[in-house]
Amino acid sequence: MTEKHYLDKLNMLLEHIEDPKQKQHYFRLISTLLEKGYFPGLAEVPIVKSSISHIDGEKGLLTYRGYPVEELASNCSFEVVSYLILNGDLPLEAEEEKLRGKLLDNIYIPDDVATLICNFNRKLHPMNMLSAAVLLLEAHDKGSADVDNHFENLSRSIKLIAKIPTIIGTFLTGNPQFNRGKQFKTFAEYALFCFNPKLANDSDYVKMFEESLILHMDHTMNNSTFSARAVGSAKAGIYALISTAINSLSGPLHGGANERVVQTLEKIGSAAQVPVHLENSLEHHQKIMGVGHRIYKTYDPRAKYFKEFILPKIFGDPEQVKNENPPLWNLYDTAIAMEKYVQERLGKKNLYPNVDFWSGLFYKALGVPTEYFTTIFAMARSVGWLAHWMEQQESAGKIYRPYQLYAGFDTRHIVK
Ligand code: COA
Image (cartoon, rainbow, N blue to C red; front, side):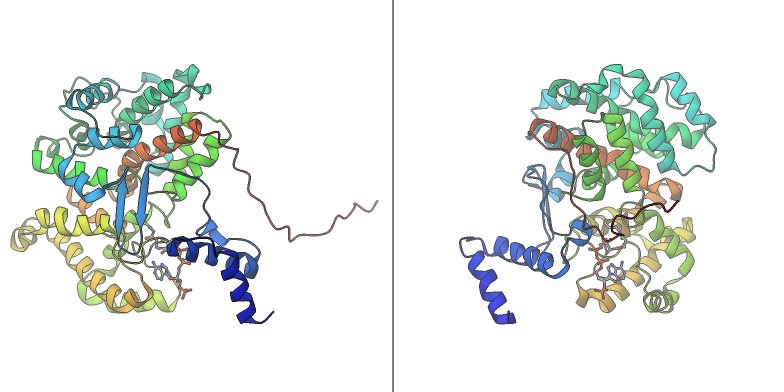
């Protein structure tokens, strides 16, 4: 078949689809299938119908249940946005308070789990620690094997979201009692306390931290959400599912990029060294961490929010930061140079900084150790993972079981 015939045939097949965007999407999918026989990285393959979040990659738009993420971050609390994501609509004030109460009533972890966390090898990466600790909680929740009751699932989800900051703080401080008896007004204050008790007294920092959590809460069918859904589709319980999602998120191509961005900035050393370093990386076909995205073809709106609304509150007075914390200023200065260089060099390939490019600088300014950055991402994204899990349990979903093209030996036999 000539190329023209092939295109005509495809267009004829898709004739009945009116939405031009959808038509283009199916066109690309069919072309990929005909060309390769499978879908590398499942790119563009629709695997589920979901109403939790939406990305328009051309416009740089991210919405949760229809609301743009920037509006939610600047106007709402962690509790309001969690309620929205988990339940589908914004809460009344009393519902927000009820959720806040339930979260703050469930922050402590069982003593044996706290002791085990403190006895973990200190060399364990905090993301692996978090994944293991979440699994340990299962022993205290025997009813969790039953995943078919929505109200139980919702209640269990809230209790698990509540515990994640305490798990992280227990490992970070090595003290199982580190937050016992403390009174917190909000989830964001409690969560920031687990990383920096001093800053948790500063309402401006609590607000910024809350915004950063909201920006990370959900992001359509990303790798960790897909992993969570895959485990959930086998009817495994909440602890197995979240533990798996944390492992996926830890990867450098996913949430683990935030840690690598700051490591890269430290390695580059100064703004002047940016061009040499980046050219060297590109020459060796190394990915630049914190750059690029499967869906965004323009600036990631979460990265934009960090850059325009959060970081200026910290770096807005250069002289002050330079005097008080020269290494932090140097990182920021290097990041600005790197962003400019990346946009000039890679913008034509639609590669822009993503959320992980800027978030690490914020966590650094909070005094969070670099290897803990992705745990903050996980504590926020747990809300999205659990909303997806509940959505999945309620739709008559099938177990995830895709197909492979076998490329190995024909049947062969042991020769005796
Ligand atoms: N640095 C340099 N080049 C990059 C790049 C990066 N960070 N990300 C993508 N590219 C290039 C690829 O080399 C490829 O170029 P080619 O077509 O000339 O071969 C092209 O862009 C497509 O990249 P690909 O890896 O196929 O895109 P993807 O959709 O599969 O991957 C990411 C998306 C996010 C995994 C990828 O951009 C990446 O690895 N980024 C760095 C890690 C990161 O920041 N992850 C956090 C995401 S929020």
